[in-house]
Length: 575
Image 1: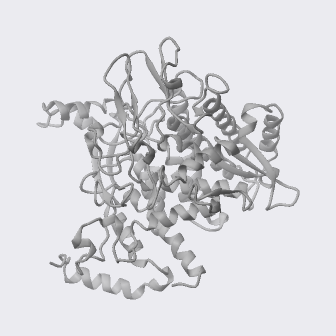
Image 2: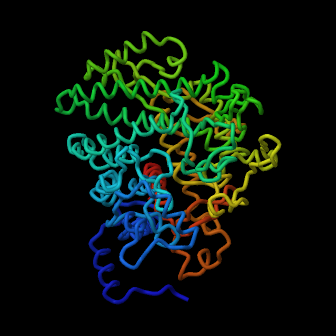
C-alpha cells in the first residue's frame, strides 16, 4: 500500500521547488540527507507551557489530583518564571513533544546548515529571562526542569557561530557575545552548585545518560555514600574549554578586531578552571587514586563512604562505558601565533606554565607548530599522551566499544563479564551489556545507554579525535581496529568511525539499510524502501534502529557524517 499524499497543491509546490533546486551540487547520498533535513524541520512545533498556571491552576482548571501527574508538576515549583509560547525544535512530535535543552543543542548543528538564523534564535531563546533561571541554571526538560543534563549549549553556540559563515569577518559576533554573557551565568551555577566540596569533582544529576550507571543519579545516593562522576567532571572541563575558545575569539586581535582586555582576562580564568579540573580528575585522593585507574587504563566513577573509606574495588565502579570516554571530549588546541595577538592572555598563560611544572603541566602539552615557523602548538587535554593511547585501545576494540556501526555506549566486554556492586549488604546490582532495549525499568525502561549506539556522543567523540589530530599530526598513529595490525592517524580513526556510523543508513551489498532491521516494508516494499526513519538509538551489534522511531532531532547529526563520506567519494572520483 503506498503512503498517503498531502494533496494536489502540496505536490505542486514541492515539484516547483525541486525544479528550482540544483540537487547535483549535493553529490552522493542525496536522499538520505534530504530525509534527515525533512524530519528535522518536521520536529518544529508551537510549545505552550506557563509553569505558574500549572502550579496555581487557572480558572476552573486546578492542579490534577492524580498523584503521579501532580508530583511531576510540583517538581517544577522553582521555575514559576518560565513561560514558553514559542516555536521550538523538539526531539520528536510523538514520543517527546516538548523542549529538552541538551537535545536542542544537538538539533541546532544540522539546523545551522539550512536555517542558521533559526539555530541562533533558539540558542538565544533558551537563555532568555523567561526560560533561564535567575541563578543561571538552564532548564532540563518538561517533567523536571530542575534536573541536570550535560552542559552542551556553549558547544552548540560555538559550532553554530562558526557554521554561520566561512569568513570570520562575516560571522555573527553579536550573537556570540550575547550567548557568551548568559553562559557565564550558567558556568558559575555549575561551579557553585555541583561542586559542593570545592575539589573540582562534580556529581549529581543524571547527565543525560539515563541508565548508564548503577544508581538513578537524579535521586539521593544510599545514606553514607558519595560519588564522584567521571563524566560529570569531564563535562564541566568540556564546558570550560569551549568557553575558553569563545572568549579567545571575542578577545579580538585579528581580522580587524581590536584587542578586548576584558575577554582576555576571562580567557585566563577558563584556563585556570580547566587545569584545576584535569588535575583533580587525575589525582583526587592521591597521585594514583584519581578517577583514572592506572591498572586498567580507563576513567571510572568513584564511590566513597561517610568515614572516608574507599572499600569496594578501590572505590571505583569498574564499568567501561561512555562515562570513561567523556574525558576525551575536553580538549583544545591553541597556536602560539594566536597568543601573540593577545599579549595579556599570553603573559598569564606563560606565567602559569612556569609555575606549574608538575601534575597540571602533564596535561598542557606543547610542540613545534606545523603551521607557523618558530611557533608552538599547545594541547589542553584531560588524558595525557600515554593515557590517551590506553583509552583508545578500548575505544577501537571491536570486542569492547567499536561496533560495525559506530561506538557502543557500554563495552561489549560486559556481555560475558557483568559488573556487580552491593552496598551494606543490600542486594547486588548488576551492569550488563545490553545492545537493544533496556532490561531495567530505570527512566521508564524506554531508553538504554548500556550498549546501544547513540549519535550524539559519537558525534562529539569524532570531533574530539579530529582535534587531537591537529596536535599530534600524521606521525602519531594507533592500531585500528585494536589487534588488526592496521595503523591509523587520529584523523583516519575519526573517518573510520564516521564510515561505520553512515552504514546505519546506507544500503549494504544486499540493498538493506541496517537501521531498518528485519522490517520487510522498509527493506523491500517499493513504496516504502526509499523512506528513512531516524531512530533514537541503534542496536550495538546489528545497527537496527530502536526507541522512538522518528527522533530526527539529534539523530539528524548523521548528516555531517554522510556529507563527509560524500566528499571522500568525490575526492576519489566517484559521484
